[in-house]
Length: 252
Figure 1 (cartoon, rainbow, N blue to C red):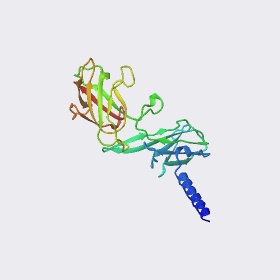
Figure 2: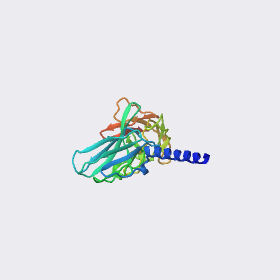
Figure 3: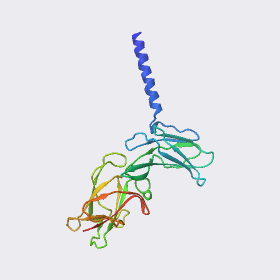
Figure 4: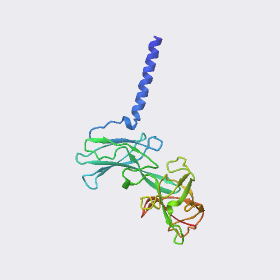
C-alpha cells in the first residue's frame, strides 16, 4: 500500500506540473488554431509581457485592423474575419527619464497569413536588425553633425564613448560603448546606430592623422546647449527626422 500511495503521489505531482506548463505555454508550444491569430510576447529576458498591443492588419481591406492586448502570461488570441490576408505587429510604450517611447517588437515570422490563422510570437529587442536593411534597427540612433567652424571633415575617425547613467529602457544594466560612425558613402556615415535605448554620458576623441584630440559636444537645434567635453545624451521619442533619435554636433 505504501508503494501504491507513493506512485499515486508522484503521478499527481506530474499532472500538476503538466497543468502549470499548459497554463503558460512558451512560444514553441503554441499550435495554430483554425481561424485565429495567436501568439506569445516576451521581454528582453524571455519573460511574458502583459498589456502589449498586438495589431492584426487586414492587408486586403484598407483601414481594417484588429487590436488585442496580451494577458498576464503574455498571450493573445483573436478570431479572424472571413475575408482577407493579414500581417501581425506588436508595440509597447515605456517611460524613461520623463519621456514616453513607443517600441516595436520583433516577430518570429513576418510573413502574411490567410483566414486559416497563424501563430505569431514577438520578442522585445534592444538592438539588432528589424528585418531588411530598409527597416533599420531596434536600437536608438545618434546623428552627428560637424560644427560650422570645425575643421574636421572625417567623422569616421572620431571615437565616441557612451557610459550608461541609470538603467536602460527595459530596466537592465547597460554597458559602456566605444563606437565610431560608418565610412563615407555608407548608410551609417555620420551616424551611430543600434544604441540600446537609455541615458548616457558621451565623450569623443578625434584619432585621425596619428592624433588624439578630445572634442567638445553640443545638442543640435538647442539654443540653450553649450559645447562641453562630457555631454548628457538623451534620445527623443519622436522627431521630424526619425524616432528614438539624438542629434549632436562636435568641434575641436
